[in-house]
Length: 346
Ligand SMILES: NC(=O)c1ccc[n+]([C@@H]2O[C@H](COP(=O)([O-])OP(=O)(O)OC[C@H]3O[C@@H](n4cnc5c(N)ncnc54)[C@H](O)[C@@H]3O)[C@@H](O)[C@H]2O)c1
Image (cartoon, rainbow, N blue to C red):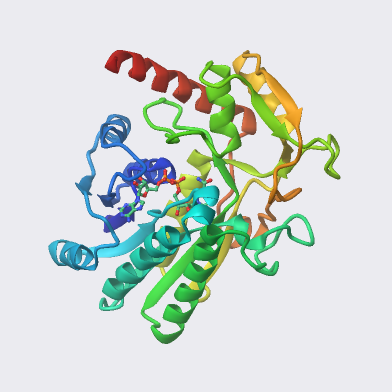
């Protein structure tokens, strides 16, 4: 089935892999991205992998008029996968209004346009951060949403509330919120991957930048947590598996298979890995030695989070296929490619 899908933030990390997955299944894609955290080169990477260049519009979704004009230009948009957002937790604490404006106004403007359609569907990028330190593990979708620890986390909670309220009054509008655990890895071709600007906030880009010599060593924040080896535990999901889940979720709505017009699914592997296990997996899968040291705990880190994947497996009909080793190997191949391109540019 072919349909026109808008992917906002489609040149970003998860968005670009999802555009590839959509095009591989025959969907017509239009990307909106303002390049605030991505590069136009990603379009070439997507094209190389899927042998198809998606339509691209350089629009800032905070501009209500431009969003309106976009929907006038593309009246056949049926569905939106909304990745565009600012995502750095620390930066959101420093600059909360930037985060509330970017993450919420873009959402509202898109929904205002979709509301005018007879049939529209929407996939929202949410996060396991809404659960905070959950009381029980693995975390199910019914676990209480805890008070957000950062403005970034709050934008995801408010975003879900906006969708709940919108779906309540408009039965023609259907939405799915996907709560990602920890997306990692890159496309196996090393044509696209994660492009952190500045010092990476996430573990995997920090690991690959350390292994390649851009950073001296990795700091492991705390080895005295109540876990088997004392380091924090997260659920690392390969971005390829994650991207496929978006296609499955979109087709669920297209084919009217949803149970209610607003649904929530966890996207994770269901398996928690400690920081030391990730380091071991990286060294095993790449043959590289990673310099690291144990330092004190970092404020705000939760001890452990991993998904209960039953609902996604059984109701959505999706499950992860890739192992952490494979994700880390792909992240490493991508890191080497980034450095090769940097050298070429100099
Ligand atoms: N990467 C993660 O660890 C993670 C975890 C949970 C949830 N998420 C969410 O998933 C989504 C995608 O994350 P990502 O890692 O791919 O991030 P990313 O920064 O790589 O991609 C986001 C893209 O959106 C674009 N963008 C941002 N603001 C925009 C605006 N106002 N108008 C147009 N384009 C805009 C950026 O240029 C970028 O290309 C985000 O909503 C993020 O909050 C990410």
